Image (cartoon, rainbow, N blue to C red; front, side, top):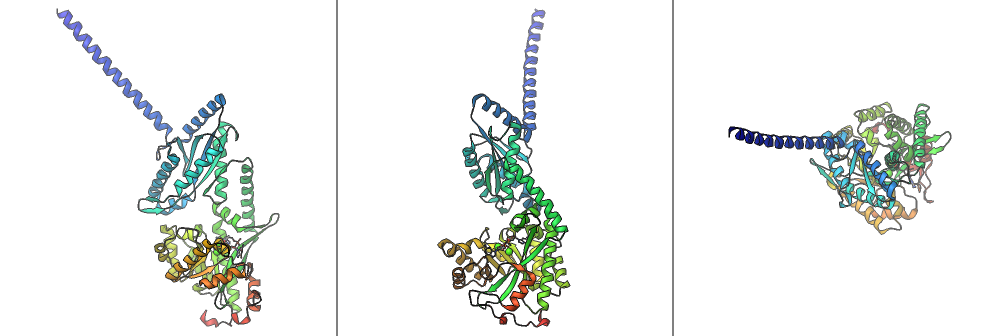
Length: 481
Ligand code: C2E
Ligand code: CA
Ligand code: CA
């Protein structure tokens, strides 16, 4: 009897032990699966990490090899993200990256396996050819363009998307890299767009590296020059200012546009040196004009990078003092998009500009997303209507409506409006009728060297037969300057 009880107890114990072991094994397997899953995921966004993404690409390529078809890799980079991260700190930066990841992974409403490559770069794998890839890219860009409302910061982001298709664009281990090359080519063109990989693109990047090296040499060998273009008062036809514009005559390539080399200089850390030189050189010319009795301001384009430099205003003040110029004679042209960044650093720089008494102008106006409230906070005295609107003025009702609303807004803010890129007498008439204060463009003068602007100013500029008379440049009371 006792033996039976013992056997029974042992059996019960054995069963309990088996259940316990099974439970432990299941727990262990779950923990291992979690660990494996975690090892595949990016910590911040929980998207796949690059190694796990490459494994998916390899797997998908294997399936395409066996049963045909194609797939795309979309490589997405957020434009100018570092600026926001630097300006608002990492916690806001992380929140933006997380929200961008969510939008990218669910663009078109489909949950997709997406990957965070590093920093503000992501990759996606999509079944199908380039038509599908470009459709997806458009929907990602649209999602990113919606306002971000994160930790009290209301901002907008844009992205650049590169698309590479397997098998057309190379082996499985190359395809992600090729999509990244396409993305960089979009960024080089200003971003906020997409393009499909082209084997030429690798070359373009090599070309860019060469151009950057040449630019470095050009700075060292003083090959850069400043040209100046007058701004003209619409009512009196007096020259009020001259805008300094950089010129680079490359020994082999000839003229290289600042639209090409300024963004390169910004990306490769050369804009600091260039920007400092431009300020000194512009003030040196303005000093010479002043000696001739010319009262015009000198306007300098200030890049986003310079707005984040601690000593920008100190440097401007020093250059002004060296050339015995008043701060109000120096215009800082800052593009609307940079002005609207509204980071702690840019706010500080604007405040320093205001305290120093510099003349501030909002450039390329109409291309960004300024609100009246945001504009009111800036110490600006002038805004420049972007050339794109001026150029369409005669043919497009929309352009006329935009320019007219810019003029109304400027009036409400007590700002003077300069129209840039005025090329025809028709545009000029319309602008004057609409109440534009100042005009700038080829109709009056192309940008010319500093000495030439002095000559033109003194001898009188030609303007549609009307001509500028010597009286425009009254002898200046130097004591007043
Ligand atoms: P921006 O500040 O908007 O300068 C106006 C551009 O329009 C200049 O081009 C000027 O030559 C051109 N322009 C002026 N009038 C007309 C016209 O009637 N018709 C046409 N088609 N174009 C006209 P540019 O000199 O090629 O400069 C392009 C951009 O490069 C500038 O745009 C500015 O953003 C940048 N840039 C130039 N110099 C500097 C600089 O010293 N520093 C910085 N940060 N940027 C600069
Ligand atoms: Ca400008
Ligand atoms: Ca402009």
